[in-house]
Amino acid sequence: MGIDIYASWPNMTAEEKNAQIVGFDTTAGHVGHLREAYHGEPYATRILCPEAFEDGEAAIAASVLRARLPAALEAAEQREKLIYQETDPLEIRRVLNSYRNFVALCEEKERQTGKPCTIMASY
Image (cartoon, rainbow, N blue to C red; front, side):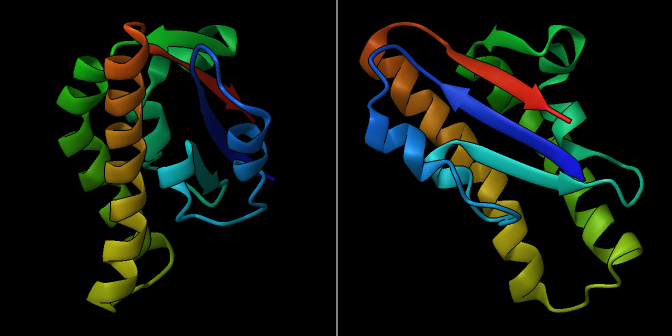
């Protein structure tokens, strides 16, 4: 079990939705999907998009996600080091880049559509 975060936006295509079906991949932020397992805190997803955990989904402005990103990255790095005992900087960077890519995608889609992405939490 784990936490799955999905971004959606106006006029999202079936191809874009299908690209988010990535199983347990923790590096799929570029398609609008973030994944964390329930192995312990801190949970970076809860820092990045807490509103999505309140009602299951929420429209969150890309500027808000961008402002929260540094704290979420710090939490994700802590998780990798403390919970998973990860020491390889490249592996840590892959996970952190997923969060960066997720926010960048939300920024791009908000620019294209004029509306913030809806962020859904499934857990």
